[in-house]
Amino acid sequence: MAKRGEKTVKKHQVMQVLPAGAWGIKSSFRSLVALLFAFLVVAAIYLRQSNEQVFQHANGTHDAISSGGCNLFSGKWVYDNKSYPLYKERECTFMSDQLACEKFGRKDLNYQFWRWQPHQCDLPRFNATALLERLRNKRLVFVGDSLNRNQWISMICLVDSAIPPAFKSMHNNGSINVFKAKEYNATIEFYWSPLLVESNSDDPVNHRVPDRIVRVEAIEKHARHWTDADILIFNTYLWWRRHQMKVLWGSFESPEDGIYKTVKLPRVYEMALQTWARWLEVHVNRNKTLLFFMSMSPTHEMADKWGGTSGENCYGETEPVMKEGYAGDGVSPRMMRAVESVLGELKTRGLNVQMINITQLSDYRKEGHPSIYRKHWETITQQQLSNPKTFSDCIHWCLPGVPDLWNQILYAYILQLNPITE
Image: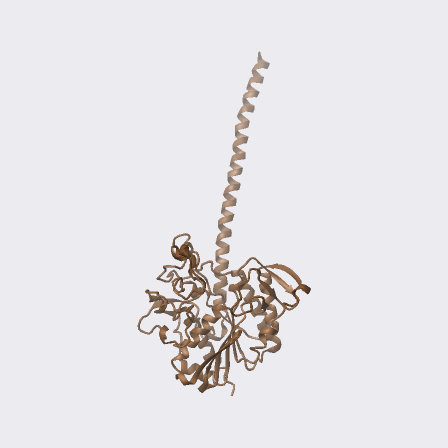
């Protein structure tokens, strides 16, 4: 009987041990889940801070202005309908229908009245005559995509009223567009080169192709048109917004003889920037030419990023984002770091390319895009008309508007760096 009792006790003890072990396993599992969740939260915070640091670091790399105690890129937008806009849309002789939002029916015109106010100083007010004097006998050339063209149109509108009609002209020749201020023998030009290096999207009109191909080591076809420019303003980002791109080692004239390879972003972007940088090193007159690179212009295609309704975009927006430090997801921090790296390498080799960081200050301006208020070259369907957000342009900018600020900052640099050599 005693032995049977002992067996019963032992069996009971075993049964007591099993639930305790099971509880230990559950406890360990819950601990692992908690640790994993904590890791994901920390990782998300780190990535967010990393992205913000990219913007902040770029804001601090503008030696020419910041060394004077003024960071033009850190500030806020202030509503000012007394001194803005700097020009009127209908009075700009060479306004583009892609950017003329008022002409194409936009009734809310408040986007024209916002002034950028740096935190620690005032932005120099744009003076067209002062700029034209600096440009006397010189070429200022914007090189890049349609956002650089957006800025070029803005610059022309800013100086337009200071030049009598008989003393200005516009000439288009393929990829290059030339505005001339005859009295000053000065030109303000735009050269279409959306990827900077050679690509199958280089035609200024027919450039939308289903399979984009880039020659990352070829730039001379474009660069020969701006070799002797006195001021060069580059940009390239919009056309690189994809996961990978086909690269051609060979010629577009004999594509069947070339070697093709698909390269992922941002590596292919870095390869193109390095080709561009090598060209600058060899060909730029360092005693004559001022060099600028415009950072990425943000898009506003996902309203939930600024607290709007999921599935909406910039259509119907009438106010800027007022939360200071806001950074949406309309740009790629990895690609911005790639630009900074290449510019840093150039600087160590004695060639200074000033990056103008328009990214965060433009990111606040979700209401500044044309949306549906622009000329559309393609036919808009009834289905699209019933849902305007489906054909809204949340990439480019209405004029007068945000690009005027980009040019005010560029103007401040030109005044300080003083390109006059005569």
